[in-house]
Length: 110
Image (tube, rainbow, N blue to C red):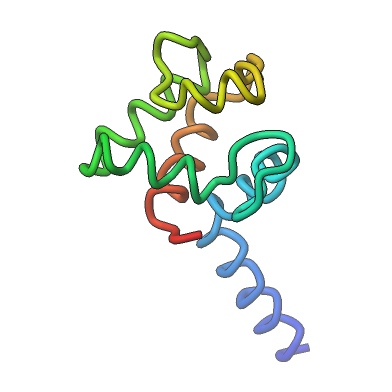
């Protein structure tokens, strides 16, 4: 019984310490593979482009979140990718979820 309880707490702490990773892998990788371009730019490419424009995490998260909440060609710094793949659709995720994912993207070298 002790092992089961310890295992549960270990699993729970891992689960909740990586919310951004879980959210990213559960939602974003469908279109944004980490390193390959399939149906949208790779997340490595997205991260590199936006981090060069917004090196401060707060500004990076704010800009990425704003774009995902309301995608528009005018807001994007990836015009070449919009021409290739079209504009990202409106997804309707909660802002807190998008912020968590954007923070994970900033912190992760794909």
